Length: 151
Image (cartoon, rainbow, N blue to C red; front, side):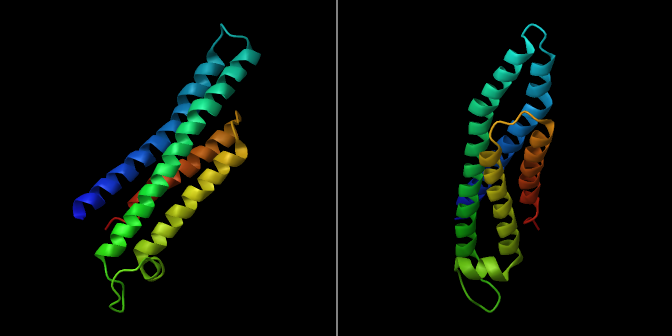
């Protein structure tokens, strides 16, 4: 059971790294590279970038976020099987979520992931710097929140 929990945590960390890396790549590498491309007219340059964001980055970000959420749910189920909550109650997801620090942190992390999904779906392929900064912020918060449940 412990080996499975370690595997789930590794998969969740890998998904979080891919998630943050995809946003960082678009913001710090892809966007400046397409903007600096002088051989392509500016209107085609924006179209190529929008196509890239829409097809590859958005798909990668959505799949990494969903993978992160699936791993978070699996980790919650495994944690519920391994611990007892205050009051001597053994197992159960509801008491784990409401009566422990792990559960509260898990709820906050899952809420961040849901906000990121909603934001990705709502904004679509945005080229604006502010939109990419917000997406980077959500991704960074999701990755950094992984450290909150460590002792």
